[in-house]
Image (cartoon, rainbow, N blue to C red; front, side, top):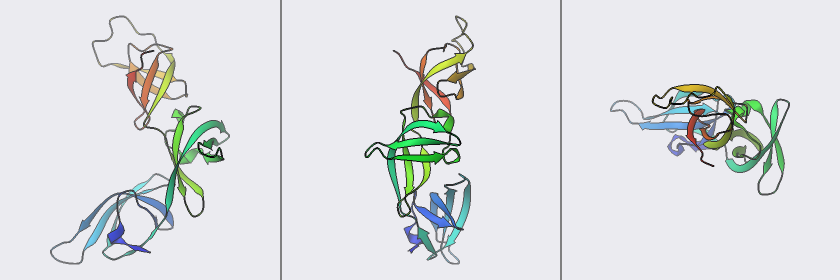
Length: 188
């Protein structure tokens, strides 16, 4: 068992029977009264972020986690199949464990967080940027590059995003998977 003095960003703990990651923390020593630790915890299963305060010296249960690189293979039912890039072992991940799952493309290498003791997957992180091809968008009009106006587009992973007016069907673009926004055009 660890105590509140061991809290740091990224630490996984058990809080109210569920695994949570410490997103932010602050040790507070007020002039009057006992010290405490103010934290922001993100629950891995739901993605919900809560504020929580621990009194100084409070015992916390730390969960040992490992991150591993897995390549996305294909969808099946309510989930996806991934393959370990080191030993070619496959794992099935439910769709609800992946934020922004509509940006998954065959061959994309993702980082999967595992509970090291139970060998169960906890969450999947997509790479920050993916290369995509525009499969549908309205045609741009010549000369429409003076403003920062955006139009809807669909990319080859099936996700809908907003792109600048000069982007056409078949163009290769870079997309930020954290925000779901167009980043840049890729020259071929």
